[in-house]
Length: 203
Image 1 (cartoon, helix red, strand yellow):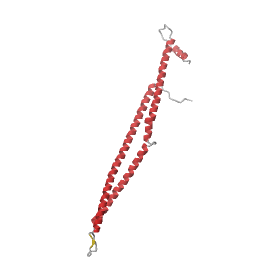
Image 2 (image 1 turned 120 degrees about the horizontal axis):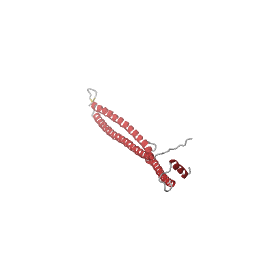
Image 3 (image 1 turned 90 degrees about the horizontal axis):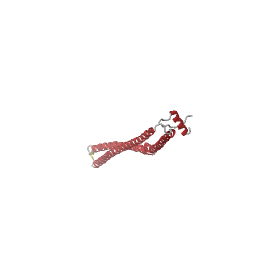
Image 4 (image 1 turned 90 degrees about the vertical axis):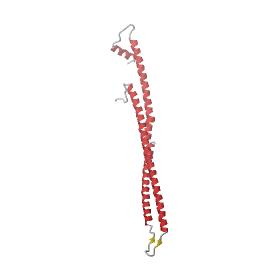
């Protein structure tokens, strides 16, 4: 059965992997910042629009109140015309103004209620994104917690591998010095050098 694991032949690959992990963490943090900024801007825009609609609704309600007062005042002055059998003045204009004002209030109230629903949905989505199980929490965990841990683990491995490589160089140099007799100006044969290395490491 084949053994599982990763076999790194080049220490520079680990260094490049560490750099890539760091860059990925920074990229994730940047994406999260942009998403949060966008969501907050959408919310702020909706709130400003809702405030404008609320002002329109309040203006329409004020006009309705004025129109109803005018109609009440008009009806208070009405008298019965004995010749025609109708009340004068007729107050038709005042009644028409009231109906028009009521329709305007209903229009802006409908817009305000719908705008409030949209704002509530937006705030709920923002809350879910910023929650512990949302995208913000996940990215924060990856970029500020997991990424530094993985990066530190890689750096520890890199330091250990560097120590091993430096140790192998020292041992190889020592073996080479020990296997060359004094006074010889030519190196040992490759086969002889390999045998000496095997004997040195008890292989």
